Image 1 (cartoon, rainbow, N blue to C red):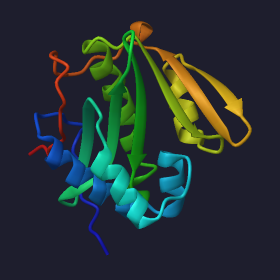
Image 2 (spheres, helix red, strand yellow):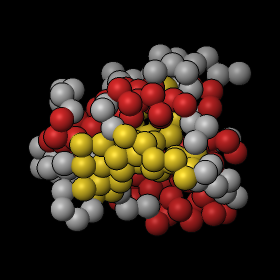
Image 3 (tube, rainbow, N blue to C red):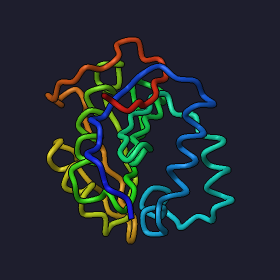
Length: 176
């Protein structure tokens, strides 16, 4: 059984596409079925999960490490007109500790500092944790049966973090 060391705070550092694709793949494969469904809107096989990680192309990645490995990720995919889509996942054994909230708060602040004005999140309707975070951030949620979409006006978001200002892809690192 893992010792569950205290996790690092969300951290962003420069990295390569190959670096974070490997880490994302390992992280995604450690997600249990329910968490994979929450992240990808459907339960994914290991093979499909590897394929998703190998094709991942987020503009910004934030992560939290604990026990020497990545346990939580927030990805920002920038689109047109200063808009982005955000994806977030935390390994099952680390849920309920505020890691998703830390990633979310820092992720919105990073997005804002890199020019994003609005963001969308897509999630399953039973995901009460993300619903709460979106409401706290002033976003609104539209439910479509078993799925939801959320819209957040990041220009109204007030949290502050040490975020990169150049909008370059970033990667996670364990803090010391």
